[in-house]
Amino acid sequence: MSIERFVIPYSEAAVTDLRARLGRTRWPDEIAGSGWQYGADVAYMREICRYWADGFDWRAQVERLSAFDHYRYVDEDTGTGIHFMRVRGRGPAPLPLVITHGWPGSFLEMLKIAPMLADPAGRGGDPADAFDVVVPSLPGFGFSDRPRRAGMNLWRTAEIWVRLMGALGYERFAVQGGDFGASVSAILGLRHPGHVVGVHLNYIPGSYRPWLGAGEEVAAAEREFLDEDARWLEESGAYDHVQRREPQTLAYGLNDSPAGLAAWILTKFRDWSDSGGDLGRRFARDELLANVTLYWMTETIHASCRLYEEVRRSPFHLRQGERVAVPCGVAHFAKEAPFPPRSWVERGFNVQRWTDFPRGGHFAALEEPELLADDVSAFFRPLRATASS
Image 1 (cartoon, helix red, strand yellow):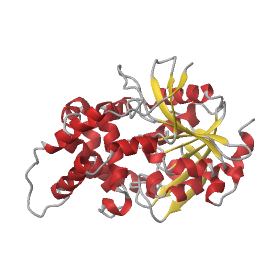
Image 2 (spheres, helix red, strand yellow; image 1 turned 90 degrees about the vertical axis):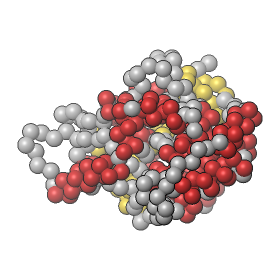
Image 3 (spheres, rainbow, N blue to C red; image 1 turned 135 degrees about the vertical axis):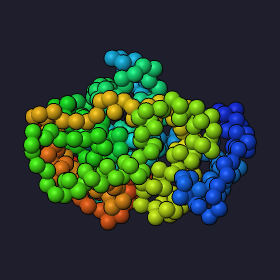
């Protein structure tokens, strides 16, 4: 069988080692009163790592995760083992839905929203809106295999998702994603429209570029976005540059120092979320540390960072005549920036629903699961009849 049950592993020895390493952290110096100006605030990191060592319970987190159904799928074409979580729908005709996460997140981002989508009646909704939810871990993330050869990019991942869903008996299905998951979802709509009912995104792929003919003008709002995007990469894209160019070098520190790993990941949760600079306003400590601990225990920080280099080599650039023609829905959360105007997105996507939300950020499924679940349900509601066609 290409699909087997998967048991979330737990190692007391690994937990002991983690706590020992945290206790031996060699803390950097700092400019007094600088806070987050130069990166992760030392006072915050000391406190979160103290709690990670003395208060955080990884065993309890494993038990929480084990309440869900987990599986491993071995893709015969690539030999890649893919972990996925599955939440079966509770309704008359659940629509298959594959949700894909990004970096520095994981399948843990979907623990809140997956049950909402699978059982809408459980929160006062219509059972007819139920989904069979499949949440895979990207290759090189979480409990999925780490690629051993170059070339495991998002285009190949989309192909694996088609085969995974087929192995589950789903020939046509819905797709949803943010961050890297937005790219995988968009690629599914572009390259595999016969399998895809519709594409819902809460992020527009960072490498997305529509086809522009020679001398074709862009609107003022589109030019403003492109300029803003360039400014953002200059001011906030240091992580992107190093992960695209020297992920191996970066990995020596992050794979060896849990404090370093936490600082690298948690700064992104702070900066990209609708937190106002206060992580505790949006996320519970255990929620944040469960994600970091998953990276630590699986030693996937290098493989996950290396995906940026794969995207650089194989970006989501549309060629002449290419367009994601299947129906697309876009959920724009207020703090997800920079975010392109609708006209720029419509150059390459068949946008049939666009929702601007007044709050929420990059980690929408964690930050605003109800808003995202409602938008996903509303978008796919009129498309359900096409799922069997």
